[in-house]
Image 1 (cartoon, rainbow, N blue to C red):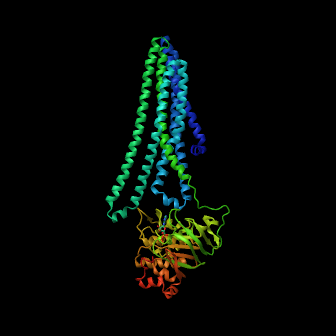
Image 2 (image 1 turned 90 degrees about the horizontal axis):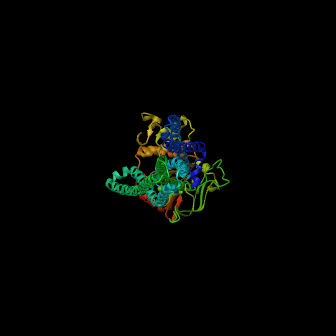
Amino acid sequence: MIKQFFSYYKPHRFLFFMDLFIAFIMAVIDLIFPMFSRQFINDFIPNRSIHAMIVFSTVIVILYVIKIGCNYFVGYYGHVVGSRIEHDMRNDLFRHLQKLEFSFFDNHKTGQLMNRLTGDLNEVAELAHHGPEDLFISVIMLIGSFFILMTINWQLTVIVFVFVLLTIYFSIVMRKQMMTSFRKLRQRQADINAQLESSISGIRLARSFANENYENEKFLRTNRAHLESRKDAFRAIAVYTSGNSFFLDMMSLASMIAGGVFVFNGQIDYGDLVAFLLYIAYFTKPIRSLIQLTQQLQSGMAGFERFAETMAVEPTIKDVFDAQSLDDVKGIIRFEDVTFAYTSDDDPVLNKFNFEVPAGKTVAMVGPSGVGKTTISQLIPRYYDVTGGEIYIDNQPIKQLKLSSLRENIGVVQQDVFLFYGTIKDNILYGRPDASIEEVVEAAKAAYIHEFIMSLDEGYDSFVGERGVKLSGGQKQRIAIARVFLKNPAILILDEATSALDSENEFAIQKSIEVLSKDRTTLVIAHRLSTVISADEIVVLTDQGIAERGSHDKLLNADGLYAKLYKAQFRGYIPDVLA
Ligand code: ADP
Ligand code: MG
């Protein structure tokens, strides 16, 4: 994992090493001042050498001016390195998420993933910048001042270093506790995000059930758990920093007393003691920043762990080595002994399921909710992979096909239509981003949504979504259909919305589906009878598998399940048991 972390420095190594080099210069400049003070007190003052004082001071001023530039460089470019690393990681994670399959998103809440892309990576950026730099400066300062102190007086140096070792030992002991509490804190933060995401997207539902109090209580619990773990984390930090601070204070005191005794005994001069005390002040700085660094290391690494964990999830649905393209698609879909379960613990949704849609035909699928209609539609574009058996398109197993080629040739209108935040035009163009505006209009006309769009103030440039125009379910669905028109795939899959649409919408959707499915292989999961009647074949699905199949007339004559339900039905809609 450390290796993976450092691999992100590689593209920015020039800036990174510049940063370290400049940090090194800063450390050296800092180390010079106490030596100057020592000289000043031991030599220049007793000898009244004004000239030497002026020369030395000038040198020091020059060094300090150089330090201004160094400070600026480290403060700015150091953070630039950290931010670039954060930016690269975020890009990688986003790109990786685009590759991951549906089952991953079934198991990860949106809010948690957002947290990984934002909060977690912020912490990583802080560590990426301060980590190596603080470590480097601090180690140089510590080693540098250690050797300088040794040249002044070794006994005094030993006393000081006993305290340094004590402080470092204490830090290591405390480290573990902090690590645990930070990991917990990150988890709680992710919980909050996940819950916020779910509650805010579901706020309309909560209102409709007058469940605001329930939502509030649920959130208060999560928020309280977050507060508690934040308190735990700060408690760990407080113990850590106060303990360290105490050791450092004691170190200053001990060296002052010991140094005083050494001066009494004439073992060292006053200037030596001053230099000593100044160096000790310089000690506390790197030690404090090392302490700070361990904190950053905890939270940064906890964030990076989550990042690495997500990056390590490999998509199982991907192109095989010699994947084929789907050319000249006829659009024959065939399921052969297909078995499928969402997870290995679940009962299979499909068991040795056999089914086909001939080229260019329309097959309607009806059946009670939960028997696997949507599942079947999701197996064809390989949103999920079958557990057993095989699905073929034009007699080629879909596993042998390039995913991009497979999905380019399938148009899906899902049960709940999703429109991106953007204009209507953008949303239709999503079907084929290089299409012209004329083609967009043509698609909208075919989907019977053009007139509605033109009735809006801003026409195709109207925004949809939160701050844009409000669309009904049927209007959204027709935009989704226009999107698929533009894509013009050989195979069409429609998972119709169950919501009862007003008759005008229903008519428009019916018309647009008819136009769209013409001369294309179409699998329609039907809730509206009109679609079913005009289909080439109707498949009645139950949890036992396919109960009956055939044309509307044939099934009516057969007087089976379909006929029974058809006769019992009320105008236009298939009753709940069937749809
Ligand atoms: P239908 O569309 O016929 O109503 P689905 O295909 O949506 O039925 O669901 C079939 C079964 O699979 C149901 O028992 C449902 O609970 C289960 N299921 C659907 N989606 C998932 C999923 N993403 N993860 C786990 N189980 C699922
Ligand atoms: Mg469904």
